[in-house]
Structure formats: C-alpha cells, structure tokens
Image (cartoon, rainbow, N blue to C red; front, side, top):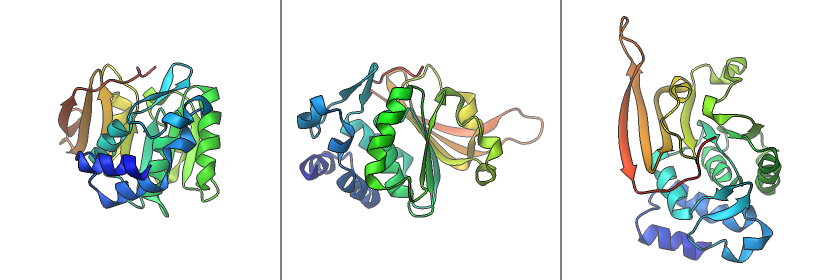
Length: 217
C-alpha cells in the first residue's frame, strides 16, 4: 500500500497530508473480495460483485483532493460499495465529524459494513451506513437535527446524467459536491442563496473530463 501511495504522490494525484495519511492507514486490501486480494495494490478498479467495482486508487485520490475532507465535517458518501472510500473519508473527519454512507445493493451494504468495521469506526459513532437510493441524497435528513444546515461535503462514486437537485439542496453554503457526470468528474461549490425573487442557489462548477464510472442507478 505504501508503494501505491508513493506512486500516487509522485504522479501528482495525492497532495494533502491528511488524505495521504488516510491512504496509508486504510489498507485497500481490506476492501477487495478474496479473488482479487493479490491485485489490491494495482492502480485499477476491481470487481466486487453485483456489477459494481472498488474504484481505481488514482480516481479516488483525485476526487478526495477535490473534496478536501477535514476533521469535524459531515459528509454524505453516495454509492459506498466496498466501503474503502467511506473509510478514507471517515478517517479524515474523525474524531468529531461523521460520514453518512448510502448503498442501494443490500449485499454490498453488508460487505461494506464488514470491511468498515475492521477500523472500529462504527464503535466510535463516526460513520453510518444506510441501504437506500442515494440519487435522492439522504432522505431522512429532516429527522436529524445535526444536519439542519446541510452537509459540508457530498461525494458520489457512480456516474449520473446530471447532478441531482436534491444533492444541491442538501449542501450547506460553502459546501462541495464531487461527483461524476457521464465521463467527467465535476466539482460544485455552493456559493450562496440567491436573493429573493430569484430561484435556486448560486453554484461554482468545474469539469474534469476523461474518467469512467459505473452508472448511478
């Protein structure tokens, strides 16, 4: 894992000390299926079953650098799959932040739960794994007082046709969304609420083309 991390640093994909530390502490081998354990440190996506993959390390590094997770934040992780990205995020937001992870495939929810549990994050109360439709964001948000202002960050590991409006609504001012749309990764920053009489909110958007993802369903 250290060799993989050093290569990602040399190639310019990993830059931030906290994210580099998370990559070194959260071992990708703990999140791949037995068939691919020997391939865990190859810079490629790997099948985890049910038509889903554990993402390529380069892609995860690129997206986390855009997201910039920090301690104390509340982050929504959509399409948690193997739980690797969820665990990287949880490492970054500890000890006072929390990651709310959503996965729609029940078998992958259990697979991810087993993998994340290897790091005692559930016992610490800093991660929550939900089986549901992440395209609508966090559906039970209104029942959670700690989320009344929205999420600090939202990240998705599957490609949508466009960024769902629900995600934008559930993001606090100054918050970031990092998510794929078709074959591009988008960074969206919520700048402000628009003045009265104008619909919606003000967003800054930036596109990074040249990636491939499983579809958001």
